[in-house]
Length: 109
Length: 121
Image 1 (cartoon, rainbow over the protein chains, first blue to last red):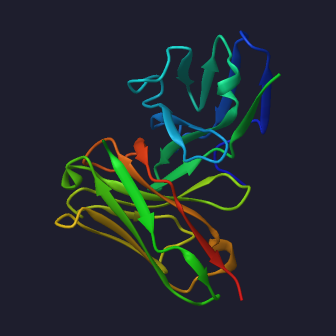
Image 2 (cartoon, helix red, strand yellow):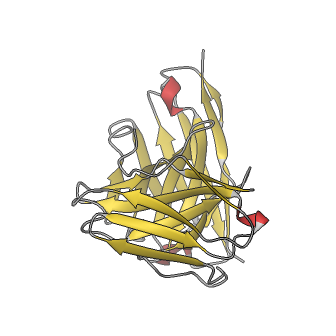
């Protein structure tokens, strides 16, 4: 059972906009920044969004993040086939742990 | 080019020990916090442990506290994870990941390819 709650799956067609939610509590998302990781099949995770809405260099601006209260969202616009991957949200918890969501498997139909 | 290369994984019996290593190159290792994150087969990511750039701050997940020890040798550009009293539920791919800063955060901008640890009799 993950501390942060994500939908197990999401899907969309090429060109569509898809959002993935991440729900937490006052001790993690409510008081700390949220980061998102993308894991393509068979590869190591990759930092996608940090500090709620910041993109590392090289990440397309099709990817965006937001946070409100104890929830966060990852949005992917102009969906492409190469976006098919698992997506994880993560945040520090005030108990001095890093907590993850269970991951969302994105399928591009 | 930043590179993180894990080693030391393998098959170990329950109750046994293993020491993972992560060799870093392409950046000033002593300026960054480092982390271990694991992923059980077919499961999600789980944070294991973090260590700040100067060893001042060390954190562990409750699931490994008292059994695992994280350490680093800045002179050798290496990160380690000593794993004792291993259990079946410790079976996972273990990733070494670099923090974006000297302080411990959950922002990991470079990852190794992972090393598989299997705990089984």
